[in-house]
Structure formats: C-alpha cells, structure tokens
Amino acid sequence: MTENVYRREKLKKIFLLVGLSIFGIPLLFAQTVLPAEEATPEEPPQAVSVTAVAADDDIATRIREILKATDWYKNVKVSVRDGVVFLDGIAGSDEQKQWARNLAAKTQDVVAVVNRLQVDASPDWSFTPAFNEMKRLLAKFVRSLPLIVLALVIIPLAWMLAKTIYRLSQRFFNRRLRSALLADIVAKVVALPAILVALYVVLQVAGLTGIALSLLGGAGVVGIVLGFAFQDIAENFLASLLLSLRHPFSAGDTIEVAGQTGIVQSMNTRSTVLLSPEGNHIQIPNSMVFKSIIYNYSTAPARRNILSVGIGYDASISTAQQLIMSVLQAHEAVTKEPKPLVLVDELAAATVNLKIYSAII
Image 1 (cartoon, rainbow, N blue to C red):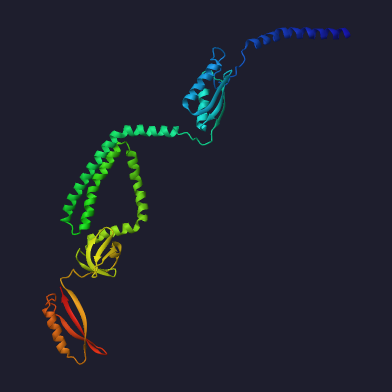
Image 2: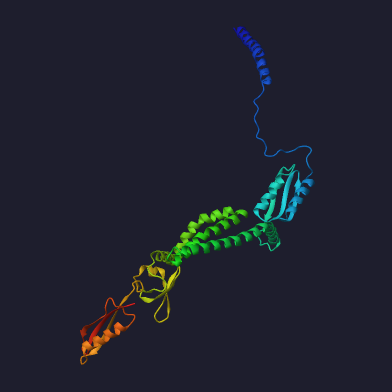
C-alpha cells in the first residue's frame, strides 16, 4: 500500500515537470518578446541641452549688456550657474522687472531664471525722462510744421470767405425781411458752413478726423448741458427770433411793455432797448417782452388823448369849453377827425371837472 502511494506521488511530480517544460518555457519567451506599452511623456517647457552649451560667463555678460543698454535698471547684477540665471538690482516698475525675466528666459541655453530684482518705489528726481519727452514733442512739432502752415493758410482764407458770404447774405435778406435782427441771424447761419468746411479740411489734413467725428458725436450731449446751464440766454435768443418773425414793433416806435414806456432803440439777441421820456436807456429781456402785453402807440396814425381840467363854480362852463375847443382846433398835432370833445365829467367839492377828448398825431 505504501509503495503504491509512493509511486503515485512520483508520477505526479513527473507530469508536473513535463507540463512546466511544455507550457511554461513558451510563456516565458512570449513575455520577453512582446513589447511593453510605452508611456507618452509631457514635453518639457524648455529643452535642456546636454552638450555644446554656451558658457555661463557669456550668458551673464550678454544679459547684463542688454539690461544696461535700456537705462531702466540700477545696480544690475547678473550671474549664471549651470544655466540658471540670477538677476539682482533695482527696476523702475513691475513691467520692467517682468521684461528682464522674459529676456533672460529667452536667452540661448538658459534653463531657469531666478528674478531677484526689486522695484524702486521712491520718487525719481531725474529729469532725463522729462528731457526725453520734450525732445520727442519737439521732433513731432518739427514734423508737423508743414501741416501747421497749411492750417494757418486755410483758416484765414475760410474766414474771409465766410465774411464775404455773410455780407452778401445780409444785404440780400435786409431787402426781403422786415427785421434787421432776423436778417443778421439768417446771414450768419448761411456763412457758418464755410467755417465748418475749413475746420474739417484742417483736421483731415492733420489726420485728426476721428477727433472731429468724436466732437460732433458729443455735440448733442454738450448742447443739452449748455441748454440747461444757459437756459435764460437760450430763452432770450429764441424770443428774439419769434419777435423778429411776428414784428410787433419797429425801431422808433413808442411802446409800453413790462411796465416801461419808451421809444424802441434796438433789439439784439438778448434784450430790447427803450429810450424813456426821461432820457434813460432801458434794457428789457426779450423773454419778458415776448411774454408781456405790448402797447404800441406808433402803429395807428393817431393816438387818443384824454385830459382832465377843473374850473371854479363861479366860472362859466360854456366859456371854458369854447376856449379849450379853440386851442385844440388851432393845434397842428390835433386831428380834425375824430373831432375833439370837452365834456363836464364831475361836480367835485370845489371845482367842476371837465374831460377833454382829442386825437393827436
């Protein structure tokens, strides 16, 4: 029994060795022959050279010369060790500090950059930037001299043309409009395009058309702001235009307006000027004239005059009436029609009051 068990165990070992020899060896070779899956490495941000690299001293010298050439940095120091650049010194701004870092990073055979530059926050008392800016402005002015000369020629010519158009227009409209003020305003409006065209040409030649368009675009907003700021001036101007169109009075007319009586001297875009009976000049805003009741005593050929005269009770009323009528009929300013009248108006405490009606030229 024991011998049989021993034989069976021995046979199992033999079969196991044969199976391993048949199947294990090919699997082993298969593992060595099949290629393993390759991992794709990420591309490094900057290639690092192993051979034929620039010397550290050459890299440092080149970067140092470029930084000094800009005149942006103070006490600049550049050192390089194994392709790593170390920047020390003072920069004028954060942008200049970043610019130096980018310069060093783009230099040949630089592996990394350690930027130890400090930004100078203290006030710079150097006048070099100011002088450089003045030189730049002077050079720009010299280049613009031909355009300036052309503008100085165009603007006076346009002004003379506008003045000529204004005079011809004023002469034309004075014959067709009753109001001299309205004729003057219309003539100025007709002459205005000449000035606008000249300004546009000057800006076009100078290359500032964009600014001109921006100004025209903002003119609407500016007009609204000025309208609120100068509301009274705009109101008087519009009132002068309406008065010129309606023409309620002319120069030389005797009028009463806003509680003032006088002879019209002139009317401008702001006010109407009257000459009072006392010889004073009265300026009334046109907006007030336009809104008020206007009495024009010069429109009709004759003006009615009413006077009151008192006589004593011991005087003859008929005799007084005859004397007054004879004086009125003999006066050249009193019209024949309508005829003058002398009537008893009131029996007062001490006098008899007569009311005199007459029409005067």
